[in-house]
Length: 195
Figure (cartoon, helix red, strand yellow):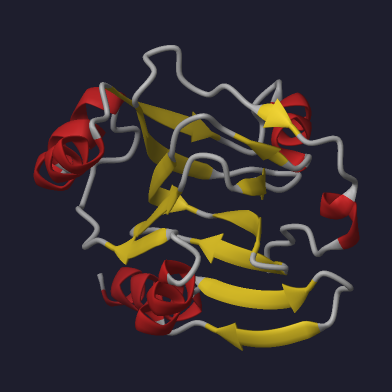
């Protein structure tokens, strides 16, 4: 039991933290922080919501219903605030047969006609926002909520071996619909490279 406790403690110690890196459009890094309040404040200046929710203990292999049930208060609050009509859970693992296709789908700069809302139940992914003549890399991890406002140009990288579960919220019941900008800016900034 002590060995298991030490392993759990070590995993907690090496767990990655959320991180915000801000770049000029020419690629020069302007700032970096892993402090949750600083991330939220910086993103609020461009209209993006970033929150850290307490995570809930879920059994291994918990299905979508169990995950949504664990976060009812938070999800209901956001549904009321944002008028979201549809909520689902997406889970992608490293051996997912369509992982490369899924990754590529999100890597180019695009916008949406509605907010893109994601809560990371477990794992992580890199949202990159292009706003206010800056590029904002936001590494989201367990417990992070990110809401990108409608019309904001951005892209998302789940990595070559994705491993995350997220709750998604939509106004449009059809779910994720993107309008690609045709810009190559996403190719000039760091991709998600897990440690």
